[in-house]
Each structure stands twice: as C-alpha cells, then as structure tokens.
Image (cartoon, rainbow, N blue to C red; front, side):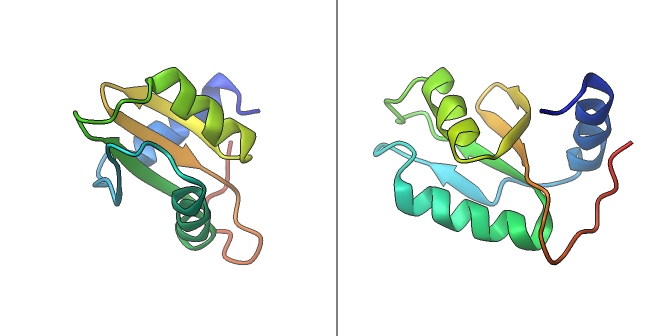
Length: 95
C-alpha cells in the first residue's frame, strides 16, 4: 500500500502524462489487465481513461486493479493514475 506522501509524489509525476489505455463498453477485461501490467513494467506510472459508454462502475474497476497488484495513486473523474514497481526497469524512487 502507498502512503499519502507517496501518492502525492506519484500524482505530481503523472500530471503531464496522457492516458495510454481506454476502458470501453466491455469494461476491464483480463487481456487489458495483462497489457496494462506490461506497460507498467516499462513505465511504472501510467494514466488510464474510462470512456463514457463503460457500463462497469469505477469502484469495480479500481477493485480489479488492486486485485492485480496495481496501485491506484489517483482516480479523478474518468481518469486513473496507476503505479506498479517495475522488476527490471525501476526508474521512480518513492519518498
């Protein structure tokens, strides 16, 4: 689990990022989680947007991320800021 200080740090790092994944009508699928985890292994910090036609509630999507071991640093509107420490490409040093 991330502390409040770590979440603030990650939010500041993610401010300039654009979402690289979109969750659509089918919701958050297993294949999408695999692709997001691969992107997090390379980048460690990404943004994911939820489209208007997504029928899955935000709380369920956040729970799925947490079940997969992905930290949700921020969820504002339809944007999620996701963090997962990389095993090989560690670039972000948390406070």
